Length: 589
Image 1 (cartoon, rainbow, N blue to C red):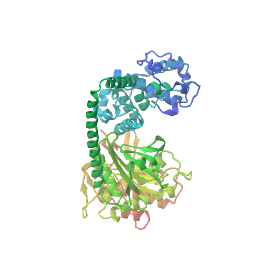
Image 2: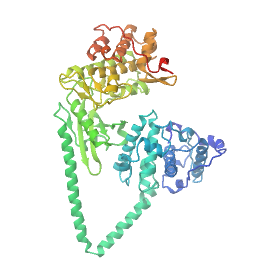
Image 3: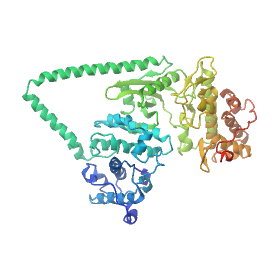
Image 4: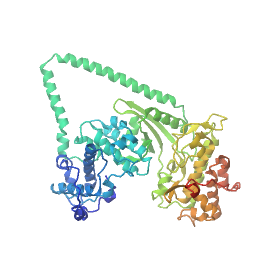
């Protein structure tokens, strides 16, 4: 339940301090001996995978504690020390070697960890007493499908909670603890549930004997079989039941087939994208195995796959917590992106829709695989690219030009125009040659011929939204231009769109404008590229970025003119003054 890079710290270093703790541990760790986990992983000192297993075992205890007290994590540091000591002593009594350290602060309840949540009452205020977790995690966890369904629901709920602050990993842990403590009808000792939620390896005994609930099921089946053999009259009842069940299955199959036909009918004929069947995608990804998982977010999970012809693809599985909304996003993205072809837009290979009574409705989009990932990863996650170089000035310049060209195609290269609505670093992907491709058209809007703007629900990412769109829902081509200006400044500076200064949030445009106004343009550039290119060209890119991201719509250029400015084909007008940022001292009382 803490970051794995702390696993190698020896817990023996904590013994002296632990023993002085005044507070007793509120968790009874007797379950450590009862639960059929694979203890062989921790028999030898420094055994591989031991720490990860003990994390899951400790998580099981924390979920029991949440069930009993309604409190996420432990009340104070003394309780943490006492619990770690009890947990370790229990393991030592089993002749095991728990040589793992625990981050004390990660186990103390804290409202700053995830959306202000500390108790189940806080959870109900943020999420509600009923959510998709009820349906997805209240199962018998037979097979990987039900386990994956539960973990997908956990991921979806935690992503929504993470939007309240930046502790996305902790929100995932909070959601997992809540699901484990409240959703499983078989109780926390149910073997398959714990094995799924906490990734607990089970002993061979667990696989041969199963849980108590499973043994009772087998006994009931045997008793029912003997009873049925003795009383032949039940055979007629069995026939009736089978007949009714078959009818029900046929009706369900017809319902799911009708759903698939309905979704397909909404996607118009396209220029090359194909319909895949689910079997092709399962074979391409090894049954959607964890080893092929390359990313996930609030809208879906992305897997790497290899098609039968050898083509490497990225397969995005849309999460189905809200069927109607997800269908709209799916058909919108499938229809729009299948119509367009441009070297700076991500190519859609195809899509897949399937539905059945067990797995429900599933939707997939199949794209070309981008080997260098997203621009966000390259800029902020210290991710090395294929040629083992960091992003130098020529690369950053070309990426900005690539995005501008892709966006210009959407605005002027097709009729009617398309407004992307969600331009940000995570939606810019890099291929093996470091060419940028604009991706994720789930929120894109195609306007009616002759329209200057449309009024629509606000969608996108905070910080990248143009003010007039965020406030009034008025969407124009200049809304995308604003977002483009933001990413230009991010790429040049290596700085995120929202920063902090003196405990206040600072927008990157305000920060960059202050440097330009004071004559310190060099301070805007990432230190790795500050001496990497011609100053006059680099400053031109800064000015275009600020102009595109101006708060006043008339001051923003079209993306076509912005591209010409970047390439030096037309002059850049003087930078107009900007309103004072809300963090300015003039607004303080």
